[in-house]
Length: 134
Image 1 (cartoon, rainbow, N blue to C red):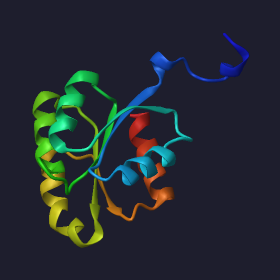
Image 2 (cartoon, rainbow, N blue to C red):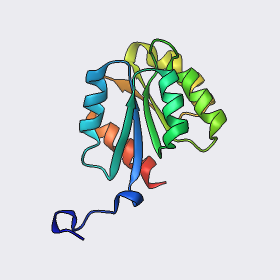
Image 3 (cartoon, rainbow, N blue to C red):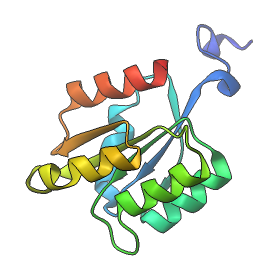
């Protein structure tokens, strides 16, 4: 194994993540926040419809997805992902003003967690790390 990879897990054993948000800056922020975790961001999507397509293509270990998006919102996408894979691990992100409205519906649809925006890095990393361990 090359020296620069010493101590790292082989890529085929690392967990994979799909980041979904219609705002490119938000996707970048999430990507940066998970950079210290043992996870590879395999792709990003800008809509719920694109998220479902990419989930079916890649089968990531975890999906981090905004709720409010054009085309198909995060809860609708979550329902489609869960119908395709009942064991999918999906974390939804919602603006604080919308969060209480969506919590019950999201959890009933199969979300493993709901986090508020703006995203608090310590809480986000803690939740993602716990879900990746499962």
